[in-house]
Length: 244
Ligand SMILES: Nc1ncnc2c1ncn2[C@@H]1O[C@H](COP(=O)(O)OP(=O)(O)O)[C@@H](O)[C@H]1O
Ligand SMILES: [Mg+2]
Image 1 (cartoon, rainbow, N blue to C red):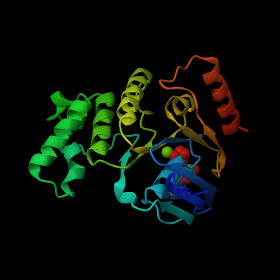
Image 2: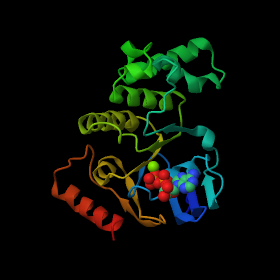
Image 3: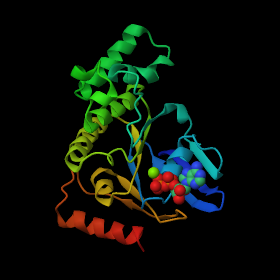
Image 4: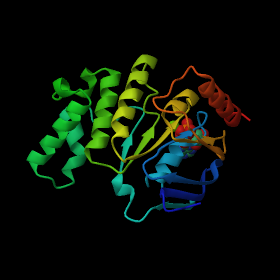
């Protein structure tokens, strides 16, 4: 399954918690630079698969391989629950991942400023996360993820905690930013429509134990128009795959 375009390959990955088989023989390859979405119902093992891919979870069967020149060190994470440090300001949160990279203070500050500007958070630089709206908090989470210049970003239902209007806006904003990079995105979601709006390819995970039912190419042209026959057609196809 691996080829020269793959940045990350899973071969026959299975995972069991005591008495519970969560992932069953997952084989898939993520291509360099693509927006890869794994969609599946709640509890189907989506977060588990991301933890395995990103190296947080080491207790599993099968193998995870990065293309040569890439490793888990090139990855950032965006979580569902924002996961900002509550005792740090927005600017300090964004700077956090840069501290271990031995950059000069001046370079760090510059990088933080760039991300604040990119996510329209300049005026909140010195606020604490609790002082922000959900949308602003998740923009700060994304800014923090991008600040370290990752090659891969793992995203675990990053829009799920937001109201639908804010989620819609932030999806557009993030897509616009990603489009100008060569970052590979690996995102999980339980929302089929969201998967179709964002993904180049979609892996469909079944209910427990999670198996990859299919991997769909999403050839809809960007920006995606949701209320079109082609969109509905793919959406139907995905629904049938998630709930066979
Ligand atoms: N550390 C753990 N110990 C035992 N069971 C777990 C653990 N983490 C997750 N699970 C179980 O594994 C299944 C898949 O969990 P998860 O990967 O979080 O699913 P999803 O992200 O798709 O909702 C769930 O049934 C969950 O209860
Ligand atoms: Mg989850």
